Length: 490
Image (cartoon, rainbow, N blue to C red):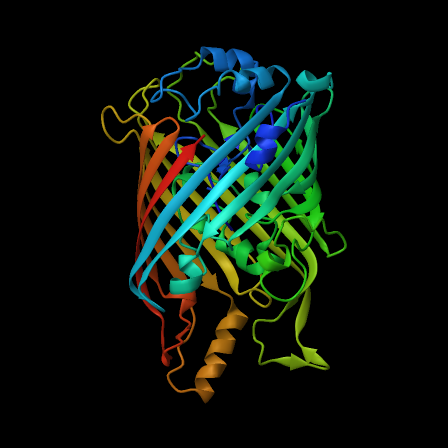
């Protein structure tokens, strides 16, 4: 569900975001949401779809030696750390440390007014096994979080689409721990270990500029899957296979444990350290095919084309666990009605629609994502995201980005039926339909390592229209939320 900023490990095809102690102490990039200009996969990095690996194959030491060293020009606040980064790069070791801090306030509606601070420190350690000890095509990754502050959505908003992609329970936790191996020929790679699916699956490049979590790991899987699925700040053991039969086509598939935090209660407390390496809690199967058009040639970064790039994805997931019927007033013999298995089908489109010239930093991109699930076993049976982003909106601000987007979470038919049944016994009890959020945002790059973001969101019918706890005969009022975020790469 969560979207975070991330950095990439060269050739990893995913984000890497570890404890500072591990990062600095081991000698032998992170979310999940990223700005629109990064195209990430997470940032979280990304968090953007796996791409751009060919451009990151140069030796780390060479990259570091050629990188700007001035405070306001270098990519990290600490630079090459007195030569430590390039020295480790010679042995295939990379590490990252990033701090995201934000303050968001509810100006109207919700269950109460007021604001909340949330902070996320991301730590990562990666190793290229060829440089480290001569094994070609191997990547090792470990990452973790120190999460601090409180969640505005939980405390003040009660929304299905969380206002921020970094909202989570305060904790220090392991996130991902995996090994990836590229097979001979370079067309297929396999990743094994603890993984967070929001780093590679269901990702929209242009949606990553936005702060609301639904533009990362959508509200549909985060609400419908056990524990919200293996997505920030949780992960699951599993195997992911990726194949690139052509430059334009990428196929992703994976099998994972079906519940990253089994048990009753808050999933993040049930797996508070991120070290519950669970198996045997059902199975989550996920697959995705991606088709890219007008991509720049990987073997010639200087080539320019007026063609506008785009990426189109089609995917599905299936979870083998049993799922309770949201119409909890309906019971079967021996207890509540449940359904075996759950599934969703989704589609994602990212398309650049305008830029004045092939070498111009300015461009406009649009995105759309639609996913559906059965309404008899899910609180949300339809999720839709769409929006537009403008990179380099002003002259001289080449790395800024502005965006406008909408997120829609439709309440499943059985959950609506249950709300209607409650209204019979409780006059004035609100019906449920859908929650809609509008978001306008602006990212301002102070330096390559420091970014500020201003954000405004407006929620219509929070949670689809649930009762106000202070007056159950009316729904929670529509909400206006203002926020500001700072992100620093150390």
